[in-house]
Length: 266
Picture 1 (cartoon, rainbow, N blue to C red):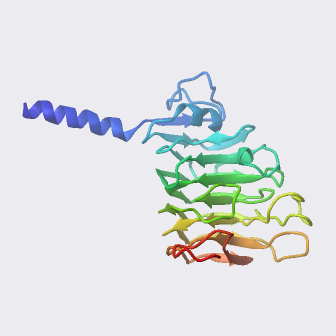
Picture 2 (picture 1 turned 90 degrees about the vertical axis):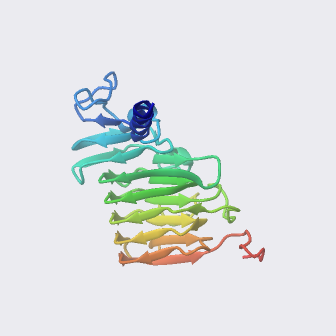
Picture 3 (picture 1 turned 90 degrees about the horizontal axis):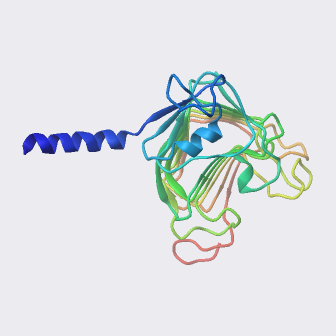
């Protein structure tokens, strides 16, 4: 009986550990995603690796993505550093669908329990944005190089994407650290995106206990045509910590049209 229980627990542990899948620039989406039979694109891998604990490993090489990669809860993406290059060929239009990698949940503060790490994401000054974490907590983005996205780099949004209002339940436990984030911000009206909102290299709204540290974040000083926000925050009442970063550009601390935790207007 004891040995049967041990066997059951072992099988349960193995199930929780998930599967590692691979993409390679010489791969094929007709393959099975194993190390010896890798897929071709990140978007396809994200559509297949959907079990909690799964990992998508991006081999060294250059990948041009033409559709959005939608990352399921509990699934992580890892690369091999700056040699794992994901080029975005998505549109410049400001909407959810034009973020290169999307982590979206429909329930506030869904536990993501996942990470994106050791990648180079390139926008080529034409793609809208790199990563959107929407209504999801416990997501870590680290050791990535993210550069030249048209309007913004990375956004952690704890509330609905299209509102400035504070979320009733904020996203908890997100982190952004040890990244290089360069030239990903724009100001609407006079900048590159005349119809959207002003954006920052990294944006964070309706977060609690978020950590932003050990990053190099660069946006040239405001020149009358481009937004200079290295970090843009709003409605983060809950101990967000920013430390150890090297920043060129401005930091914006703001709030929207909702209420704070005491019910007072902002």
